[in-house]
Image (cartoon, rainbow, N blue to C red; front, side, top):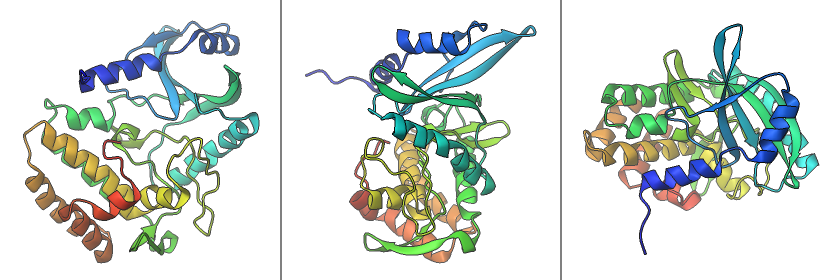
Length: 302
């Protein structure tokens, strides 16, 4: 059986996410006076929870761009579920922003019915520059930009006030639970000229004060709630998931070895504001090839 190349898989994935006739009809009904053109930006990954398209239009002689998202596409959401998720998008975005994350603006969002299910259409600020997956996998991009990306993420994760961190034991490890979850994968990060942006807010990963999920749904997240908390809601889990992706992709294109990455990671973490218990756990996980992360999250390419 012939194995598809990564480029072929990405092409097929992108084709599946092109807007269909019903979606385009809804767009036209929402914006009857504006003519949109679908453009193909470089480094624009598709999400698992959404169908995403970059639109361009002209106003006052200026070309403008907006990210059109059809969130929850193919997930079979009921109207009530879609309205719940839509109502939590702005509170989740505001929570991230309050803790220092750069997040694109959502200009408008609305629940719509498409193909017998309910989705959330949104129109978001476009952050040019390409996502971090394309940055790390591009051999033409210098290593210093990739180190900058990693350092910025570590700095942001370390910046949470200790008063907003809750230490819990999850799957046999004492870890630091954040005030919200972060789907911190490379495709959800854009390294732009004015900083690093976290660009995917669906489904919103808000946590209650007792660190239970506010809007957990198995339609959107295949991980059980406790596993999802470990890998997206803890400082250690969120970073380990991201770093494993960086290590795998970066070393695969040459120019840097896994050993070099791990040696410099040690220095980076030790110079950060992370607690020594967190740094020691992360370094131990990396050195032992991620036994705790594998226990809570098997998928290694996302």
